[in-house]
Length: 107
Image 1 (tube, rainbow, N blue to C red):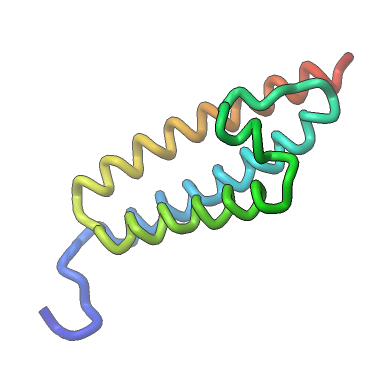
Image 2: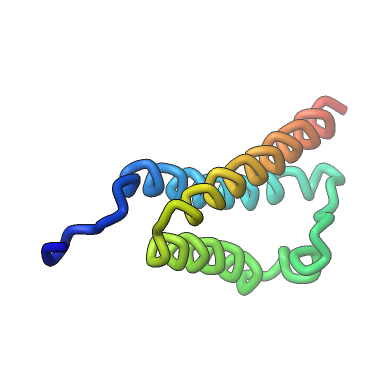
C-alpha cells in the first residue's frame, strides 16, 4: 500500500453513506426543533432531557460527527454494511419526524 492510498475499495461509497448519515442526524435535530413547539415530544429519553439546551444541541451534532469519523477511521466492508443500516434507520426516524411535523402543522 502506498502512502495516502487506502486498501478499502469502497471508500467512495462509504463516504457517501457517512455523509448522508450525518445529514440525516442534522435533519432529525432540525425537524425535532420545528415540531416541539407544535406539541411534539422527544421520545429518546436521553435527548428529551437535554434537547432544550445549547449543550444538548452540541452533543447531538458533535456526537454524530464523532460516530461518523470513527466509522470512517475503521472503514472496511463491515462498516459499510453498518453504515447502510444506520442510514436506513435514521432515514426512517427522519421520515417519522416529518410525518409528525406535517400532522401537527396541519392542525
